[in-house]
Amino acid sequence: MQSLLDQLRGLDALAGAAMGGLPVQLQPIPGSTPVVQVSIEGRDELPIFITSSDMQIICICYLWTEDEVKPERRTELLESLLDLNPSVPLSSFGRVDGRYVLTGALGRNASVEDVAREVAVLSDNALDALDALSEFLN
Amino acid sequence: MTVIKKLVTLLRGSAREIGESVVDSNATRIYEQEIIDAKHSIEKAKGDLTGVMAKEMQSAREIERLKNEIARYEGLAVEALNKTQEGLALDVAAKVGTIEQELEEQAKAHASYALQVSKLKELIKSAEARIREHEREIGIAKTTESVYRATQSISENIGSGGSRLANARESLERIRARHEDLADRMTASQALENELGHQALEKKLAAAGIGSDADRTGKVMERIRARQANPGGPASE
Image (cartoon, rainbow over all chains, first blue to last red; front, side, top):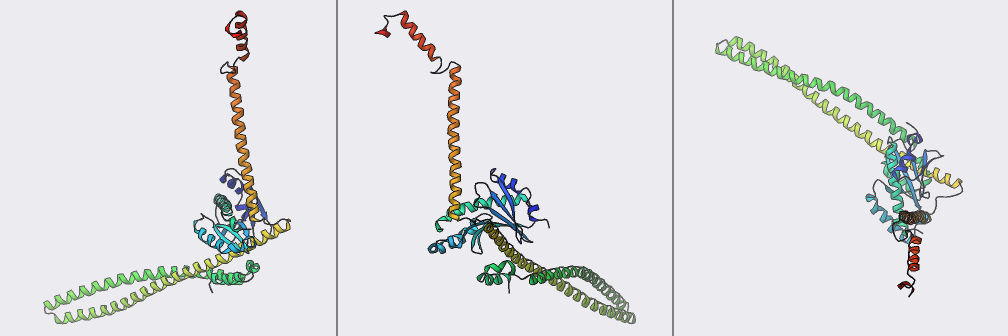
């Protein structure tokens, strides 16, 4: 199986093109599992992280942490996320270790073009979601 | 225990260990081995199935042949009776008896082949279901591991860089401000472009002697000369 970074070769240019020509940078993150950070110019605070298992490529955008949620509106936020989830194209809301995320998954052998489309959609959805749900945050 | 049930239990506990312990590597190995075994047994069952199905078809043909034989000999026995050859008819009847025995055996064999075929088909189906189930379980386990490990790597990496994943509201405001700034700059440059474009056009028109700005000096001179030529004219009064 080829390495994740090899599989993502050319992703910066393709994802940039998919987002109307925004400059995009890739950077591998050291650790026990392959992770590549995708930074999109103008959206530097909302990078997309790509990781892979034997079966899937997973794109993750970290939205906010548990302690940023207004406690009195937490249930409302959770319900909104559940209600929104089926409607958001290609991306799902979730939580990993206290961090709220938006994720999208592809097959392990997805083409770099497919990953680029996923990254573009995920970034747009994440920004949109953050904008729409920021009223629930401190 | 199903893998999702196990996950739910794990997630109630310490999330930090999830990266390693969703399904311990031993269990994953066992699942993977079971998948390999199930794939082998499917292959073998498919091989067996072809053989048994061939035998089933052969025995069906044999049954057909024996039935035809019986019909033929019974016809012959009738002919013998018609010709009052009782003894010959009895011999034929004995022959038919023997064929009938053979037919019964063939019918039994055929039924047992049919049973084997349906058993093998069941076996293949259940092995395929087992593979699908194990692959799903391993998929969930490994994906959970990857996501948690990746999150740990990202947190550690960003933590060691002196910064942290920024506060979401602040991030949003910075992104918004940057977008607004970009939008403002685009508006400004558009306005500038319009203005400069306008001035450039006016200059070109003037140079061509068209419009109110064209040859302003010339027109003034004309007026002065007219006044000089006609000092008592209406202009001085």
